Image 1 (tube, rainbow, N blue to C red):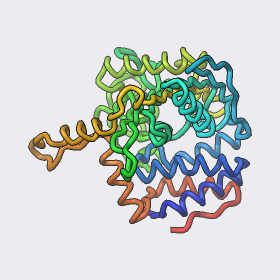
Image 2 (cartoon, rainbow, N blue to C red):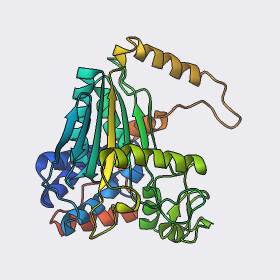
Image 3 (cartoon, helix red, strand yellow):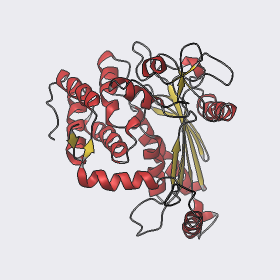
Image 4 (cartoon, rainbow, N blue to C red):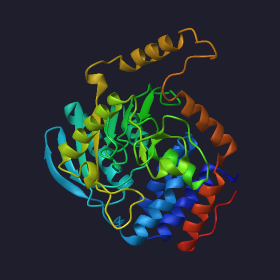
Length: 349
C-alpha cells in the first residue's frame, strides 16, 4: 500500500486540480480539505474523492470557474447560490459569511443551494470553531437512502456536524461530531467497491430490493440503511428541510450525485456560527470540564478508556503526520489514472 506524506499529497493534489483548469487558490483549498480528512482517518471523504472531482470537471457537471453569489441577506441570515461551483469554494465563502454575521449579531445562518460535494463537513465546522464560534454544518445529498419502511431512495446520507471553539493555547480542537444520518457514509461503500473488497459489515446497506446485505457489489447497486431505523430517517428529513427546503434548492430525488454524470449535483447546505461567549463567557472551561467528566466514567468490559467524539481522529492525525498517509491500492490506481489524464505524474512516496 503506497504511503504519501501530507505536504506532498497536498501539493500534488493542488497541481492536479490546477492542470484540470481550477484556479490555483481554489485548487489549494480543495486539496487541503481532502488531505485534512485523510490525516484524520476519515478516508471516506478524503483523497479518494479527487478522481470523481476530476471527472465532474472534465464532463462539465461542475463549473470550476464559478464562486456563486448572495441571493438575499437579512440581519443574521443569508441565502447563497453556489451556481454549480466547486463545493469547497462555495463552503469556504458561506462559512466566512456565517462567521461575519455571528460576529455582528451573535449568530450567523447561511443557507446555500446549487452547490457540490464539499468534502468532510468537519472541515467547515472547524473553520468556524477556529474563529472562536461554535460551528454547525448540515448538507443534503444524493438520494441513495430509503425512508424507513421503504425500498426506494429518497434521502441522502445528510450529515450533521458540530464543532466547539477551543481555548487559546490548546493545540487541538477538543470536541467535534461529524456523522451521517445513515449507519455509515456512502463513500465507505464506494471505497470498498473501488478497492475490490468483497464484503462490508452487516447493517451498512441493503440491496436494490430492500434486503439487508453484506455483499459490496449488491450494496454498491443498492441503498444505504438509515441510522437507528426510523430515527435516522427522521434526522435525514430534518437535514433535508434545513438545507433544501430552507435554501430553495433541490430536494430528495431532484439531486444528482458525485458519481452521476450528465446531471448537476445541486446539493444544499446550512452553515451556522454561534458566538458562544455572548451567552457564556466561560464556555470553553465548561466544555473542558464536561469532556473530563465524561472520560472519568469507568470503561466498559473490553475497553481501556472512554472516548469522546474527535479523539480517534486526532490520534490518527498525529500518527499520519508522523508516518504518512496510507492509500489503498485501488484508490492509488484511480488517483494516478486521473492525474495522468491532465498530464501530472504520480505523487512521490
